[in-house]
Image 1 (cartoon, rainbow, N blue to C red):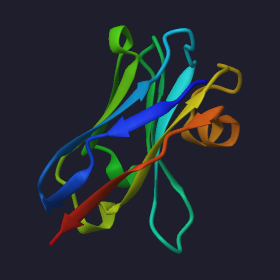
Image 2 (tube, rainbow, N blue to C red):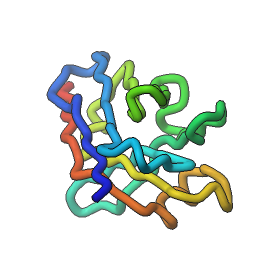
Image 3 (tube, one colour):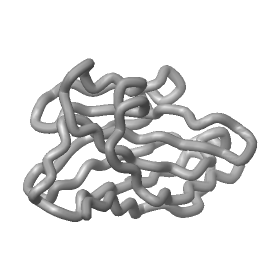
Length: 128
């Protein structure tokens, strides 16, 4: 059974940094794309970033461009989300997702619509 295990969430002050990790539990599963999403109570889930595994293509929602960086360590089967210059509006539960096929690309929306697996979430809280 494939699991995505997120870690790295926490509480920081505005302007601070956090790095989220998402580890794929088994090396027998290699997704084509992975992404990060976030959600706050009462709001729709928002796509944050996406990446094609083994490639160089990355995608970001406008609100995090220049502040967040998605990256991968294939040896560890892990994707990261480095979050700098955090703002209170970044407060949310953050989820990672894996898309098995490269069909339709690794755009954030494609990952969300066709994700095969989702993590359990890690909470990020940014205080002003």
